[in-house]
Image (cartoon, rainbow, N blue to C red; front, side):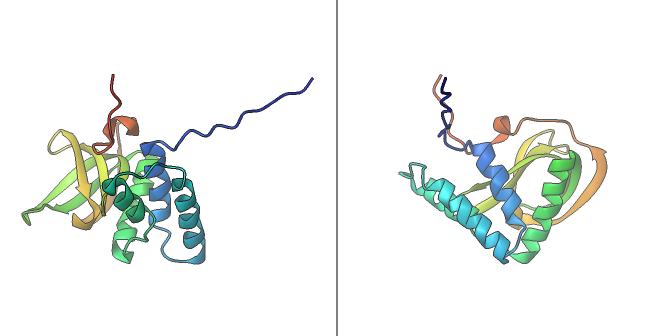
Length: 161
């Protein structure tokens, strides 16, 4: 009797792409990071890229973050993995600075910007914080509430019901 195993060729989900990209984001520009980003680009070759937004986003995913932003990304990634609240010092588009405690859910890229997506305890709701506007990030020992990343990706296309 012969057993045939079918390989799955389903495309990566938005949450899977975000997780992979975040894992690569703080690796810097060393040889391991270059190889990993090349592998992620290879995974993208099978996606239908008929949209400028998607093309720009995927290019951003595979570019290394600036050193200071990568350092903050590492703290955020650790907090997501550990399910701990992070305290961010955030400068909004108008230049106003606030300090917020955030239950981090995931990180994502939209166009040319990285975002931390989570539940802001100050605003009591889901928010997306641009990495380049995060001035500082501090880990805390406060447990974050568990959330599924798929429900928190504001830029993903919704499937028709």
